[in-house]
Image 1: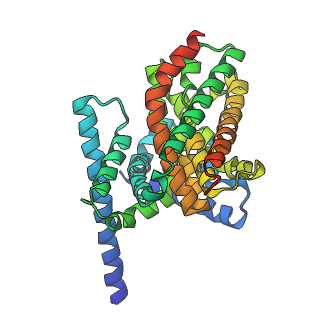
Image 2: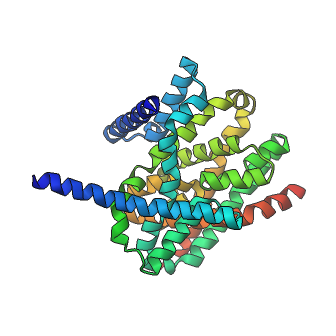
Image 3: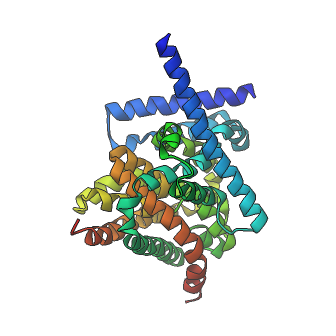
Length: 228
Length: 125
């Protein structure tokens, strides 16, 4: 219990510290989440601490991941009138984004000729972690690999997403939000919220709709693609 | 004295808001378990909360004290799961070219495709 409290305080302190660093030097690679993961992973490997021991102690923080998904209803509701007009559009975007993620991951797996278990683990990387895990498990993948990869996709999107969209001349805050929410789930959504509340609201709407789209659409779509 | 009362009031508001979120989460966990709903329970909980807000049973102002800070610091909650990467160092060593390609291509293709389509649809906005 005491060690758990200590780990939680340490993680929060580390996150706070890296946020301060990021504020002072807003370079994408100094993304606080990435820095925290790298620092703690290195510490675990160097100090030879089992991941399970760390994870058990960090459980209170992990718990809030689920609470945060529930909390997304709030911005979604606040933007409801605005988003209602674009619901079909966001649905279309989420189909395109989710399908492209599945197609690309499967093509790469064919290209590198890896086994089916690994390619099933990479089938649904653009959506929020719990959905990815469920979908990849239903397809026979390794849920832990899926979970790590989906976080890294999100980190990548959180770090480079907004600057990539700027470079592609996609500067509309709502369009940026939809792209981040569909392609980079909650971490992209977190970066969208840091950027602008409207971008964040559209990102959370797009992310939620994509999560539902993925849960329903990816299992049959992947099975069909894998047969081709 | 007034400061103290104000921060206590703030704390109570936060606890109420968090309580609503937790109630939604746990009723969703029960529902997915009972009725074997093939969707993750946090997602079902979010839909329940959305319904409660839409039917005006819950006022959005009740939720704000917990939702605002939780969403602001959402990235923090990914740290424990993200550190899970330490379990797969041998797999990373074996498949890193594939994983790196996937990591770059999936979000880049997704962001640009969706970004362009989204921009098209919002043009007359």
